[in-house]
Figure 1 (cartoon, helix red, strand yellow):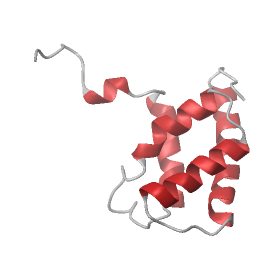
Figure 2: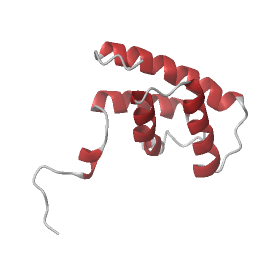
Figure 3: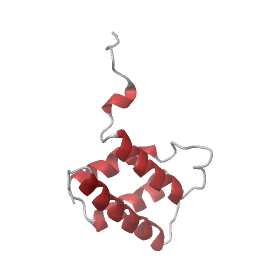
Figure 4: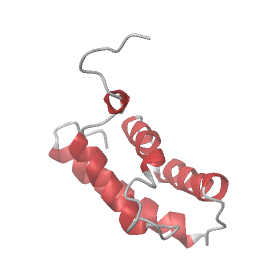
Length: 107
């Protein structure tokens, strides 16, 4: 296998570094499994799927369902109904502001 100059694994990620870092920060603040202080990349598995959903025009229900699924299927939690709902509201608000700030206005 030949290395491609200038390519690195992160090059395939969607979104700008600023957008990803901002989303990572929100997910780490939420920290549903309580490890973000020691593992800043714990929720990176949700970055690309969330950004794809936002850019595709996902509504609050789709984002909430995605978060609930990740909590249950990926992290093995049984969240209270309010947990993904509250985070969804924060994420929707963040996305609206972020998309307007960078001129893409997906919202």
